[in-house]
Amino acid sequence: MTVLELLAPYGWIVVGPLGLRVCGERGKTPALLLGAGIVSASAFTLEQDWPAALLAAPCVVVAAWIAARMWRAADWLLRAALAQLVLAGAWLVASRAGLRMPHFPDAVVIMTALHFLYAGFGVCVFARATAARLPGSLARAVSWIVALCPLLMVAGTALTRWLEVAAGMALAAGVTVLAGMAMVSAKNRIAQLCFSLAAASAVIGMAIASMYAWTEMGGAFWLPIPQMAVAHGVANAIGFCTVGLAGHLLESGR
Image 1 (cartoon, rainbow, N blue to C red):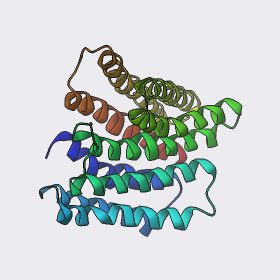
Image 2 (cartoon, helix red, strand yellow):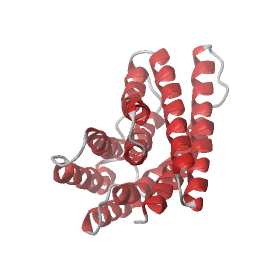
Image 3 (spheres, helix red, strand yellow):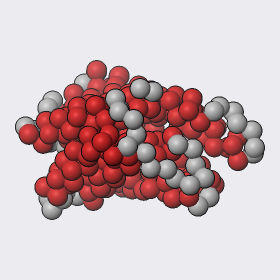
């Protein structure tokens, strides 16, 4: 398994259940997502084909069930998180089925699955938890930005790299501001450390991706896409989502 392939089940096993706990979910809901993630890990032991896609399918099924269960009582930011969790599951199935996007490297499909899981679900949950603790126009405005940017980045991949780069930079700025606001307002010392690490990881991860995009548009590949995706993905998956969401869990005392 490559690092990108490892990040997929990691997200469903760790970040997904952790995010649900930050949202106040307990019991079978996070456990079901954890189970789906464990099953999805076995999909990466097979060659890309429909048997592997079937092993990944529980992720999208469980994500859709969770979204349907929580949708009516959810606010707009939680709905954005749930919708992107379902999209992450759908792209994961597409990746294990071996589907390809015309004129794009093979890694783009799994990268899109990771994008919706971490930059979509993980970031939206983090933004929601931060805005809930810091009511005010600034927190709400930044939350809107970070919720919309993952979708704009995917649209930019198909339409124009300028949109993708602009959305990526806006997302990096937004999550850094939110992590900084969470750090300053946190009362738990360990949570403060988690938020500071999350902010640093957001800056590093998005800086790598933005530099790659700018140099690629100029015709010079500063870093090959697999290496860029690994550095960017690890920083966001572990540094921002895992550590940042753990900070919110610590701060809330759940």
